[in-house]
Length: 263
Image (cartoon, rainbow, N blue to C red; front, side):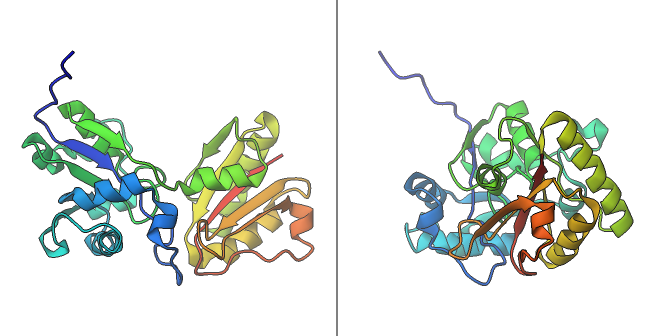
């Protein structure tokens, strides 16, 4: 039996990147990305990304393991607009304020494969890029997710909290009063439904976040903080709020962290 003919269109590969972006230390890239992902990334020439500079740095690391099919200087890298980073691009349609990413996929319509990357982890998961994937589906471009680290799932798995029912809620308010109100709301939801609540924070606000958590949450609520995931210095700390208040030290101001609460 003959194999079905491949579409003349290129494919959109969702290329995960290491979780050590912006960290003082880096793990060897082959320790966090499998061989097949590295091999695919080394073969691509067209990219859609958050930041071209960080993508070139990622490709340099890939090239140290697998020779790049196209030199870094000749890679075709297109950045997502700044407003996509600030406002998100997860709206269902352009009519609802979503970003129209179809023009970014012109190379795929000409038969060239494209890689979609974020600065850390899996693109579109707690990062922009969903508009590009949505546009690919609308244009008939095959979407191929590659294997790599997803900080939210690593943090959830290591937390001891409910992994059967959970929600990622993005970033919490920066204002202390608004953050406290939101935390109490999430805590009540977790207690009522058993649903683990996860969120992330900019590293330099880790101390403020942890302090706000210990002030707002009930003593019996379990709080998990996973920081520096996949790095040699990685820590996952999961204790009741009462135990945290006895002097458990949280992450520093340079290390990315994922926060989770539950009963």
